[in-house]
Image 1 (cartoon, rainbow, N blue to C red):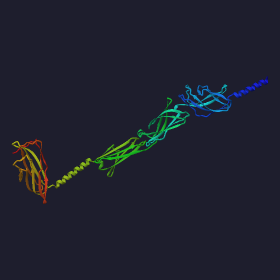
Image 2 (image 1 turned 90 degrees about the vertical axis):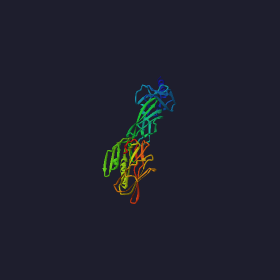
Image 3 (image 1 turned 90 degrees about the horizontal axis):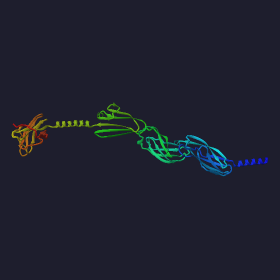
Image 4 (image 1 turned 180 degrees about the vertical axis):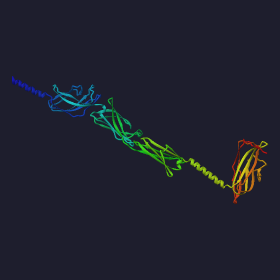
Length: 459
């Protein structure tokens, strides 16, 4: 009996050693993550070697995580098989960070072994990183990127990138640890007034109807860029337009100096007024000092009006010219007309000729003409004419020699039985004389008369 009991015990030990689970389990994956509040599983890649007899194995845990495969996995004795374990999150698990839990591998006979797995539970925003290259005021484009920091494949991502420099929308997929880059064309008008420094690059990520906000940094490097332009236009009224624009991204100090001589400064106006004016000899230096913000400009208009001095010069030149012409004139002949009332009611005018000799002249002859419809009254004031031609309406006086400063007054009366309305114009008279053996001729002014005037009766 004792021998039989020992034999049974030995057979039991042999059977137990043959039927017990003997597995070599190696985890080949790493950094498994589970996205909080998104029903996406974590995946464990296992390499399992069956050191015992062929068996069907089941995987499970006691913490409420759903695990797949849900059925059994057959592994023959001595076989090594790669098994992918999919672990779904629990809806009631409110935890962030690394989480270690125990799971079991059980054979058909109920024998089992336990293993431990560690996963990282993160928010959606923790899975991404965004960033960009540097940017300057002269940059036309910028490269931005978004990278997947975790061991998780994201399909069908919708991302809106936004910063002070641009806004773009992109849709794409991002595998585990993958990075995608995008080149963005820039419009300088969007950031011409921004100062140098660091600006936020935000990415609004939408995945499985869940939204996350990820932030990065764009460095706007310092650039001192002050552009000066000048334009001068106008001859008589000259305008000098100076513009200084800050195309950089730092505060730019500007000093503008304009030189004017002591003449032009008298006729110059400034907008805006200069900060200072310094005189050195025949020149005056006007200075504008200012600080120009990025994207802003300083405009200075300097207007020099030469119209007034030109008018003064022209007026003086005209006076000098007339004075010279007057000084060269030997005889000044002028003509006046006045209305007189005749006793018979006829239209009558008195014509007066004034002959002034500035220098000694000889053989002075004065000729005047009357309008065709007018007749000459027989009485003459002053000297009588030498001859009168009724057909040609020509009256002529022979005054002989005249000394310097001598003055003669010639007058006569014309009348007409035909009434005259409006302006009555009489032609100028002519004086012909001899000076130093040469014949000269001078004309008087034309005389005008308005017919409504009334004069005195002829005596």
